[in-house]
Length: 288
Image (cartoon, rainbow, N blue to C red):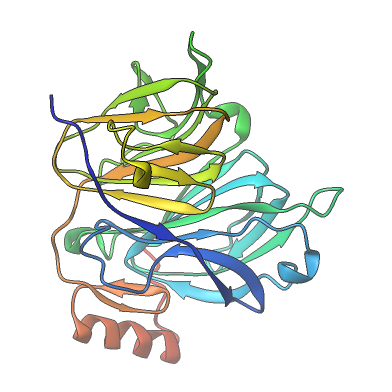
């Protein structure tokens, strides 16, 4: 047994995307080595409709998977293949863009104007970049929730905990995506695959995200991302006076070159150039 140590902590930053959506970028559009196989994480929680209603009009994706997890409100979506639907509060969409999707995403608030969730981008390996697009969509009732004896609540989107599996299956990077809530004065021990990238994003409260409680630099609060070292097979998180909620995300690094521009991620600049040329000349979508 070896404890995972914190490599560094990231504070999210305000950005504007789409047609004018105000959101918080947790990480993305920088060097991907530390977060490999993950490329980007956005936090788009908001109670101001002016900050989100213009949404994300038609745009392409190739070479990645986008994972949208809603807490409040909903996102209406449609794509160039004729698919359409709604991701409601508590639900998840795991979209494999593969060879290419052109889609739109339009957020809507609840009756109080509250809208919020997270979008994670995961890279695809070279051999899967041009795979056929697919969707995995799950309503809140389809996502397992474990209530442990010590009051810890674990929502399993992907991966498994105590032999309970999340609904997102057959994902090449073998990810885990958990929504975890820990009550006050509680310690949570979690087994993690040695060598896998491990990220924790705090969305409520604060906790110590290292086994050494004397190290106050490991006390991390809402809006901060903890990036761990790659070695170690156990994670220890301890709360004190308040409950803490966080997203735990892990996956197998691809260790491949990345050529990235906007919503398209390939392995070489030549592949990237071809993708944009195809988008311009109308051959981007591959109908199989």
